[in-house]
Amino acid sequence: MNPMYAQNHDGVEEAPATAALGAAENAQALVHSSEIRGEEKCPAPPSPSFLIQINGEENQHGDSDHTDEDVDWIDLPLDMFRIILGRLGAFDILSFPLVCRPWAEVYTENRRLQPGAPTLLTSPSEGGWEIPDDWKRGLFFINNILSRELFSVEVEALRYERWIGGKDEWLVTTGQAGNFKLLNPITGYYIHLPDNLEKCASFDRVQLCRTPTQAEPHDYFAIAISATMLAYTMAGNYHWITLENPDEPWLIYSDAIMYGDKIIAISRNGNLWSWGLDEGGENPMLLLRSCVDTRTQGWKQFDFILAPSVNRNILIVSPHGDYAPLRWGNRQSCHSSSHLNFLVDGAVIHEVDMDTQSIEEIRDIGDQALFVGPNYPFYVPVSLPSGDLKRNHVYIADVSNDDAIAIDLSLEDLPDNVSLINYSGPENNYQVPMWFRPAFP
Image 1 (cartoon, helix red, strand yellow):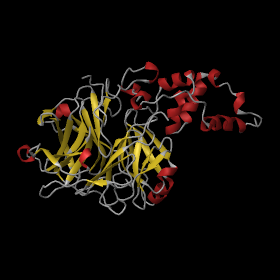
Image 2: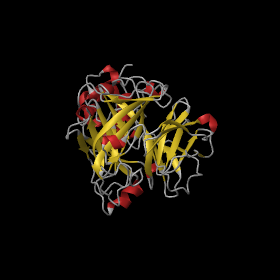
Image 3: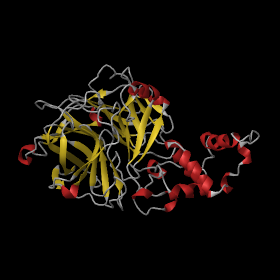
Image 4: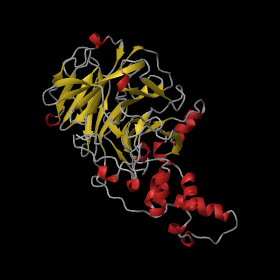
């Protein structure tokens, strides 16, 4: 299978990431095209924010009679387009290439924020007494790992909310009352999820496996994860359905994911379990017992993360380490206090053949990078290194006191195979560091 393809939640190949206007020289040319979500986007007129920034500056010089209709947007000098692009906020940048061909050409020259490219969401780094105000304002940072540029964003729908999961450009958020909702921070569109888990504070993460599209604007599938309980819901359901726990001593869930018409989960013991959606969350079936033998590996600290593979199977990402510090008390996490709360010194990847239930260690994922964490896992093709993006790496967000780590799979046995990625102070993250892929609005 072509490594440029990534598998989505249903085991169906996603279209390869393509560059806007066909320019794809390196990783900075990544664009997650609207074809991936089955959408057709038409060029849009300049948004009011574009017009205000230019007309407002001219009006400061006394041009009070100037109107939007006086501007021929297509014939403006290219330098003016560059000035406009440099003054825009994160989400307005995504609208910039949709306005007209000249604007798209300027966007291609220097993409400040690229649809489909990986970014890391974090809290503002000031911290201290400013945290409650930032939370009230819905303020957060978008960190572009290709260019290492940081964007400060305020989203009204995120006021008094924090995210606990996400997929691509969608977030799962929870409010002060414990309610869940899906939120697209780019468009402001949101969907309330069922509220029968509001009193279950132990559900601190939601795996968003399917998101709304233009064709199915209300579609979704989500799995709520706690240490000892799983539940799922989907479009058309009015409640969460709790999964029957398997008969496993000292059961603690590490991760769960949707695979076709099944939910697959892995425990801290390394046992892989499956539930058929047609059975209503009952009758868990053991797929593999102790699929990764941590005793023979000699790991003192370890955890498991599930991801789809490019071969329509399941990957088990196993971060491991030797020392377990305590998280900062005011650093939020999507996970229980023990999950990924150690200094990771490497990771091993195994691929599970879902037809034969056999397992094989993987040391090379080719010219691509895998992004996991509180978000639904995704792959990014890498033709040339750019910023913090490199081929054959696994990027894990929300690890101990670090925003993220990058693991070079080709250096698994060497001490320098793990790189730390930090954009904010370790003590100041009231929002969980999480990977995010922006999209055209």
